[in-house]
Structure formats: structure tokens, C-alpha cells
Image (tube, rainbow, N blue to C red):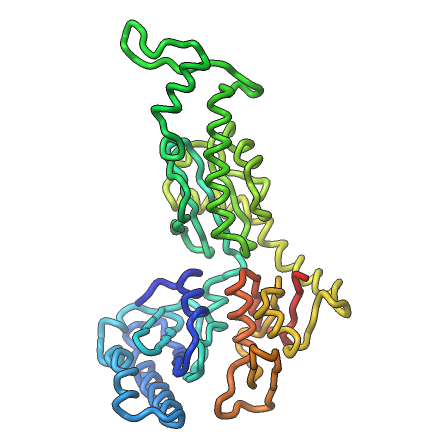
Amino acid sequence: MDTLDRESLLTLVRHFGWPSITIYLPTNHVPTQTEHDVLVLKNLIRSAEEQLAEGGLRSPEIDSLLALLRSTVTDSSEWRESAGGRAFFIAQDIFHAFKTDAPMPESAIVSDRFLVRPLLPTLDIGKRFLVLTLSQKHVRLLESNGEGVHELDVAGTPDSLSEALNIDEYERNVQFHSGTPSTGSGGGRRAAMFHGHGGIPDVTKKNLKHYFRMIDRGIHDLLRDDDAPLVLAGVEYLLPLYREANSYHHLVDEAILGNPDELTPSEIHKRASNLLGPHFSGKMEKDRADLERLTGTKSSSADLKEILPAALEGRVRVLFVSDRESEWGRFDPSSGRVEIHAEAASGDSDLTDMATAETLFRGGTVHALPDQAATSAIFRY
């Protein structure tokens, strides 16, 4: 089974092309009671086969696409662990399988993209956050979707101050400006001690600022369309220097103080979660209040025909959708024309899920709620 996190969700969102097969399976929490689950999965596979055949695929092609899924049915090891549900995403040369704690709907859909909306409550994507750990020896950008953290690759950023600078040239520069000899009686180096405000040597402060600007450029390139809160972790004197360099708009005031190199990922996750508790408890209420305040203006809409093209353009900042109910139809991205049908017809797509995928792909927030009657959006512009 694959790991379900934001990156895997975005991988699903980015995929496009028919046939894209999505199968959701509600399962028993008791591992010994799996016969019913296996039977339901067989029926869902049969439904996918029928949809693929209606789309024009021949039996050998269908068998090739569904071979790995069929092997899951007969692999007893796959059913030993309890789960609230399972999700399968299949296309040519693609097979993703996830176990979920939250129950899943029973469905098999063949379309031109994967159906992702039922996964959102499992990910608790509204509680996603980032932590940037800063020290002179190491820098990490960590992401959490509510359960643990994992490290993100920030291309082009230095891992340490010595990597950001030519350290030998840096030390010669310090010695030259300080007039401090490079060796003493013990043969060791002596650092310059010209201090500016706050007790940090001026030359060191200059190089730290350069180091942090390099990090910020990498963060900006990676997170340019993101809106997740970012928490800093580091010793107290470093954090104001990084805040001067920062250009990410969602850096929070709260910070994890101390040397982050001495903290485990689970400790960082726990501390950041505690700091951000008030932030998350108020985010949903704030988004709801913003929607209510903006209803009737050009900054919001409850019309999917308007929302879907806006999502494709990256204009949707917050999207409210039902976690299960769908609106079916067709969308032509080149013209922006949206057709909504009372019932799903051959060739239709789940337009609600399409709006969800486009919003997530472009860094927007999606609230998938059981009591959400109509799709509604707040626009960035």
C-alpha cells in the first residue's frame, strides 16, 4: 500500500487521461471479517470492467489494466490490517493503493481523471502546515498533514551556512576585517568579534542574511501558490534575521525555539501542532465568515459554471464542496464552457471533483464537508 499524504494526492490530481479508474471500498475494522469486503471489491472490479468495455477497450486491454487490482483480491496479506476503507487508482502504467482510517464510499468510476474528494477528510488537509528548521549546520523544510511530518526537497537551497558560502574565503574575510591573527599559541583559528545590534558579529550577521536569502528564494519557488502556515524552528537570535529575508506570505508569528537539530521529527510535529491549534480552530470559521461576507459580490460564487473555469485559472482561494455529492457534466477548458447534467451520462466527468482537483493543484484550500449543499468558492481576484 502507498503512503497517503499531500504529495501523493497532488500526484493523483496532476494525472489526466482516459481511462483513469478510481475505486473506493468501505472495509471492516476487524481483519477476520474480510469475506464481505473481498466480495464487494469483486463487484466493483466488474463495474469497472463494464465501463471500460463501454468506452471501447478490448478484453486483453482491460485484463492488463486490472491485473494488479485482481491480485489484491487473492493476496491474503493485503487484508490482515484493519482499515476504514481502501482506495485504488489505476491507469496505464499507474497503480496506487491506499488504506484509510475514515470510511470510504462504495464506488467504481472510469473517467479522464481520478476522483480525489473522498480522500480529503482522511488527509485532514485543512490542517496541513510547514516547518522550516534553521541552524547554521542544517536546514529542513518539513510538511505535515496532521499525522507526523516528512521532509520536502527544496531544490537549489544550501543545506548549511558553510555550503552557502565559500567557508575558507569567509574565514579569511573575517580575519582580514578584524585584524585578528588566524592562529594563536595553540594554532587554532580566532573569530572576529565586531558586534552589531543584538550582540551578533557584523560579518556573521551579513553572511547569515545572505544564507537566509538563498533559503527564502528556494522556499518562494516551491511554495509560490501555497497558503499553508509556515512555522520557524531555531535558536532565538536567528529567527529575526530570517524574518527579514522572508517573502512567504503565510509565515506565522509563533515559533519553535531552541536548536532544531536536537529535535526528532515527532517532537517538531508535536510542538508545531500545539502552536498552531488556535490557528486551525479559527481557519474554518474565518473561511465561512469570509464566504458569508462576500456572498453577492464578485469575490465569491455558488455557480459551478463560474467556479470551474476560475479554478482552472488559479483564481479560487477557498472552495467548499460536499465530501460525497457530485455534479456531473462536461467542461471544455479551451472555451470555459460548462454543461451540467441532472444525471451522469456517458462521457461525463464529476465536475465537483474537477473543481477540487484544480483548486488543490494551484495551492487553494478545499473544505470537503458532509453538510455542504452547493459548491461555493472565494476568489483570489
